[in-house]
Length: 423
Image (cartoon, rainbow, N blue to C red; front, side, top):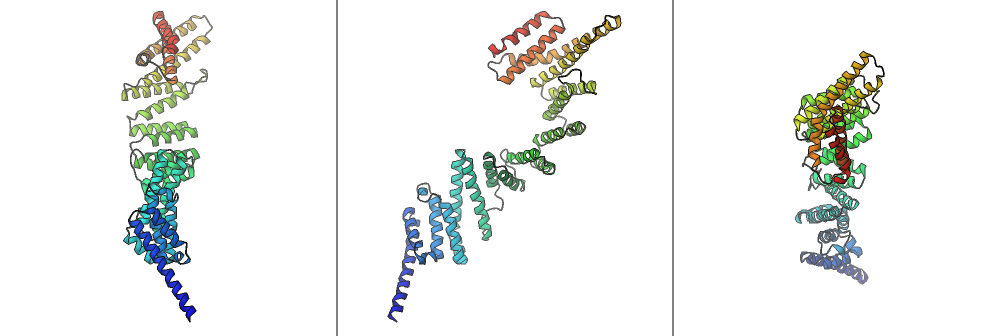
């Protein structure tokens, strides 16, 4: 009997020690002495009795989540957020009713602090462009949200759009396509928009399915993009490019006409359309003319002039139109060179063709000189800009040669020759 009483007394002492240790840990936590609170709760949970105490595990979740979210003490538990969540899980296993009451009383402090700790880790890693680490922290936030819902705690929205966006963004930066698509798709399902940031997600999805040649999901993504960001040209241009990749020019040009009918002042689409026909019409082999060469030339001229009307100050368009006239003149020169006969009718034909080439040179000059005038005053140029400038000078040399204006031809030839040193 004495032995039984003695054992019972020991058990009672152990219970009292456990309760006192939990109480100590709470007191230290309330006093923000987190190092002492950690020591106290760790000692409690090192005992068999403490391991079976739901309140002890819950207190650990409070202490460790507080440590994780406090920069002064976070080094005490490098994985404090994870430790806090694991402790909360253990507490729930032992007595979910009591622990749920604790959470409610504490305004869900262990969960809120753990989430704040993960968010802080993300911000640090994001600023340092440590994308893998940033992604890991954000996924933990997403997992924490899922955890609370499995416990019937609707603390956060089912889809936290900000978390989804940055998780997808970090995955994108980490070159983890599948994860980027997963989180961006989750974001897109809400049709959330936060211009300009969230636009990245919708564009990424459209381009992803474009690259995968997944036509159904590609058009689904562009349709959603148009719905959420209707003023963006990206969706239409990508759809046009997709049609172009398929090689069906008739379908492509019909789509351009459809788009411009609905949005006639769309500069980007107008230029895209003009460039597409330009590239089909003006090939490196001047003898291999497109079957509808004359019709194409008229359409390209119409579209470039329309683009200039939309943006009169855009001299890049004017350079393109100048090139268009120049290419036609070169094609005529090729025809002239092919005439070897000195018969009167052939001589007349050559003269007529030369007159057409001069007419095209006259058309090109004002557009080319507009480009030249703007860029000649520039100092140091980028490689691409300098290349275009030299092309412009070269075309003007050709045009003035056609007009037999030696002085102007010499002027632009010198500008061409001096371009590398001057710019």
